[in-house]
Length: 238
Image (cartoon, rainbow, N blue to C red; front, side, top):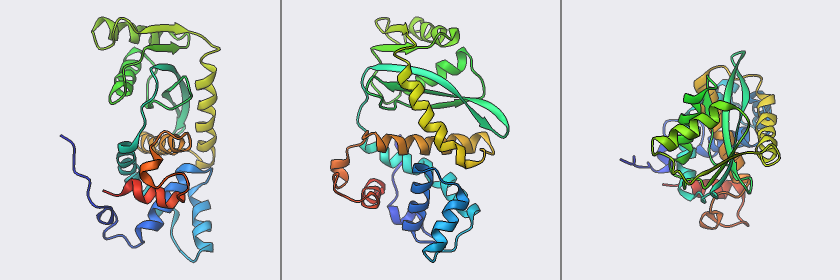
């Protein structure tokens, strides 16, 4: 059952700050290489006094809702995926970020996991296929667990037998380059404090990257001539 989207003004009801300020801070934090304290300084120059902990709470609270609303305008990705995992530090420990892009570099999905094993790879693939077309080709690195996960999903009938699986470092350069953009955004954050917070923030960063890559039907949100704040306002509207 799909939950009802509440009117956008209800999203910010009871907040001390206007909804436009909340959206602006969250949008800038997810889109640019800024820390919470950078945003505090930027808002202060505009005569808006807000604590960095308040912006942190906004990011944690609103990012999943923003993802849900933008998803309505998503364009489909192609059926040729390049899949790989990279490392992200959370509370001083490394966790694993699974990500695929299609052959054009469009982001398919992401999955943050405490383990790097067959089970994690299967969960990730199921998540990636939920709401997307089933891939025709999947390009993996040489890590055996990922190949085993694909084979198991084929055996269970969750993935068609006809899906081509291949290993190619050359083809996977595309996803490795894409990882770098995500990691560059993470550096100014001075560390993620919990796994749950990391998953939410990663979802928001991936959303911002998808917007930059043109993965949404902007024509329905005002077109390419509309200002970013106008596009966001249209995307969030119920």
